[in-house]
Length: 68
Image (cartoon, rainbow, N blue to C red; front, top):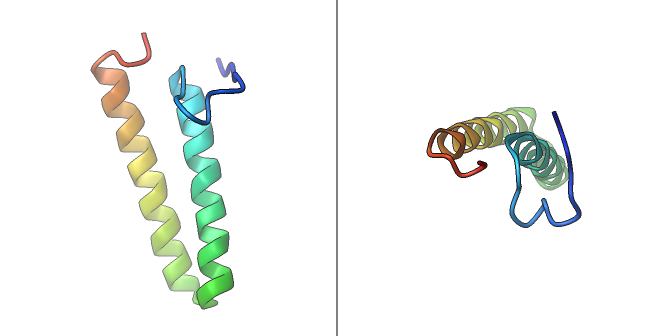
């Protein structure tokens, strides 16, 4: 279940909030890269790398008990 607090963008309090803000920041980064480069491949690499880092980071933090 996704419960967001106003301070979740600083330190997420649950995995859902971490995924939400990670994906949100990744999309913003992808848009910024598109505006700067206008190269679809660069945008896709940046966006997919951001999704991967977000997913792996949340999985590791959840595995070590950060969110409990």
